[in-house]
Amino acid sequence: MARSRPAFPLLPPAGPLLALLALISALCCCSVSVVLRTSDESPWTDEFDNVELTCLIESISTKTPRIEWKKLTRDGPSYVFFDGKISGDLEQRAVIRDPATLFITNATRSDTARYRCEVTAADDLKSFDEIVIDLVVRVKPVAPKCSVPKSVPFGKSAELRCLEEEGFPKSQYTWFKDREEVPDDPRANPRFLNASYSLSADTGTLKFLAVRKEDAGDYFCRAKNDAGYAECSAQKMEVYDIDVVGIVLGVLVVLVVLLCVSVGVCCAYKQGYFSVEKTTGNNYKVPAKGDGLDYVRTDDEGDFRHKSSFVI
Ligand SMILES: *[C@@H]1O[C@H](CO)[C@@H](O)[C@H](O)[C@H]1NC(C)=O
Ligand SMILES: *[C@@H]1O[C@H](CO)[C@@H](O)[C@H](O)[C@H]1NC(C)=O
Figure (tube, rainbow, N blue to C red):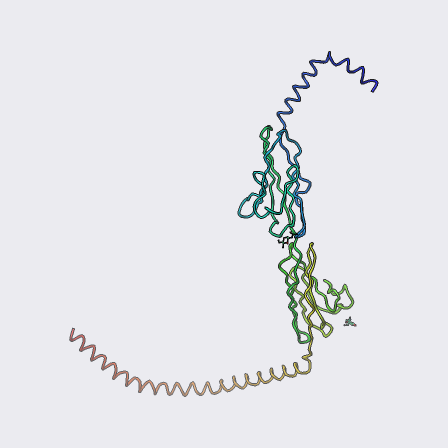
């Protein structure tokens, strides 16, 4: 402070320097450009919550810039904020917060889109800037549709399916058997150690290659995404034995079929040979009669033709 006081009296001689400074600042003033910035390029919110699409003006010299917001959809851009008013879907749900931030209340799934903040500053050298913000509104999954086979024969394959289509981003699926999570790898849990299945978290399919007695139980599925999760109610899958009835019946059926087929083939083979010879014998005789008739007919036709040709 003591030093700065003697500095003041020195100023008048530095008059030309001040003028230069004024000139530089004037030049700077005219060369100012409008520059936008955002604190979050890809914000997200859960459905029915609020979200802010920040559009900050980093530099500007124009006092009243023109601010516009557009929603960029597949059908092209549409106005969200124009001429000082919010329009479209967001009409009752959004406001502009100083300087150009778009604040959306009660976001819905259809708000998921890219939005563009555009600022036009007429008095600036570079008079336009824009910034694009990618908004994701996450949607909680609804209870998935689950299909669990009621009863599966021992040793056969079985497929359990789970599907949920509301959630955004897309749901991932987990299966539970008797309230215990079915692990991706059966070896991860001793209770599933000897099970043979494949599990897809993306498609929601739990596929047993060969069911065991131990695979019987109550199954339910959970659909989950970043916004939350939902479950279907548990359904029972039973495994029945076909060892006793099935295999004996199967073998019997196979035997009967084999017997029938072999007898059939044998008979057909034998009879077929005799009948072929017999029928060929007959065929010679039958056409002989037929030939006679044919000749008669052709004769008639021939006569007719002769007559008709004669007529012509
Ligand atoms: C939010 O929007 C949904 C429809 O999209 C409506 O049912 C609900 O009442 C709204 N909630 C509020 C707090 O405005
Ligand atoms: C898995 O199989 C092995 C032999 O095949 C058996 O000793 C073991 O007890 C089985 N474990 C379970 C959990 O079923």
